[in-house]
Image 1 (cartoon, rainbow, N blue to C red):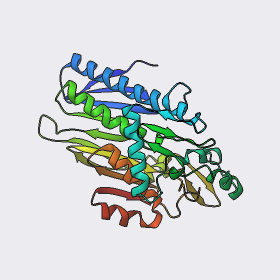
Image 2 (cartoon, helix red, strand yellow):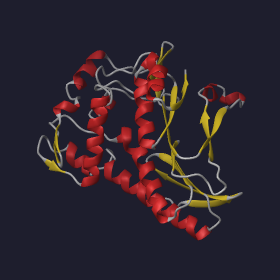
Image 3 (tube, helix red, strand yellow):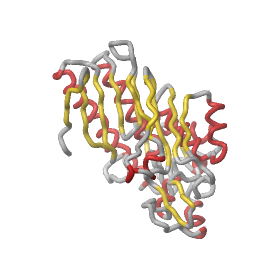
Image 4 (cartoon, rainbow, N blue to C red):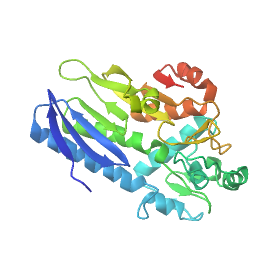
Length: 301
């Protein structure tokens, strides 16, 4: 694990570290270097704690224990139970579009920018192991049938952003912007009464990078969370068709006619994240879906 870095920029400190396969950044509205260092270390510790606890890539955490239980009862702690409650709520509110049991589809889909599209037979083989209703969840006990698994990655990073922001606010009641891989959260305006300036990248920048015509939309974030979902970095491309890494658990395929990118601003990063993901899965109806939620959003096609 590399040490975090800290530098002063004009009127605030910027701390950086790596976690959850993402660049992580903490903007701290203070001139106090010792306080900034303390907050940065606390942020890194919390991000790594959550990553270690819920990552599906580890074999020493609660996620692995649940996924290797083969239908046996596993009693979980309060934090894990709250995330499972949220996963169930998201499944129900989305009519099954958001399903934490759909991670097994990664066995068929490899989003590496190539043209290797799985066959329908490969996908059908996995669909029988997808479906939240097949899980027995009676807090605090979960039973996951053999062959199935849960993957909290769809909400994990946004959850880590919110948890970190709340933790840092408890340490110091100042304005702090938590940015984990482009998912953001701040709990209050800065000491000058203004918000943090945040940029939403244009998907066009990925197509025109060679010409250096990089564009972004900037706005002021006073309070709340922001999350982005899209296919700008993880996708497959075949016969002119771009396949997003966001898969519909009911079909095993990406939603048709989905935007390249959806960014949502909401009360928390977790809320923004689920809305951005669900909007992607709405395909052509993404904008209509987001308008109905009455949230600020940026939808790029």
